[in-house]
Image (tube, rainbow, N blue to C red; front, side, top):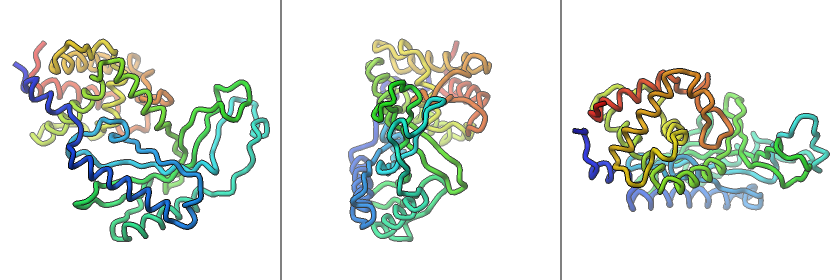
Length: 302
């Protein structure tokens, strides 16, 4: 018999509670208010992108901190196919520098939240939680325009991403909007089981840690979503029980992560970067070990 009943698993696949949702909403509103009230920022073309677990609708109870990207669109970075120059798109040099923009964002957040509640990290600006709001990570970024697939030299024919720099000067490019849209599509194509299963994996991982079971450090929420993104849609059959979905997905992922050759082409949910490669917080072996540990923890049998 499995460790947890389907009734228990069904309760775990739900998102944050109404109280947590309100605290999340409060944090997002306060961040927007802070930026829009700053004299040097309020007239800039800025878009707020809520990303991470909340933006992707895979957040769970006790996992409700948020990631908010503050994307500047007045100035943007870009990438073209080989041999193409910016002049062919009518692009001129921008007037904003990323370092100056980040300083303005920090100023705005300190003014709103107080310096004692703000910590500048390597990639994000962290806002401490309180009884009114959840913890938030704010990422200042410029819009990134990927023109590599455009052959018509049209300024609007780009895939939109973000680009920012860490405090250690590392350049980081992500595609949060593509990630969100791809997740929505897979969720639709799996009768809404994809995101619910992501939440289940995250809850089970947390339960394993609570119960003192070993879990590799690199098993992040982002990785879990990426692993299930690469799991075939028919694994999430609408008629299957939660224990069946867990069993079938673990078996698939475990077998595919035994060797590099069977998972090296897997992409992130955005499909713009490989999920498993050197430099990640996780390794293929970490993933395979975790899946084996999870199977045993759930007391599944062959």
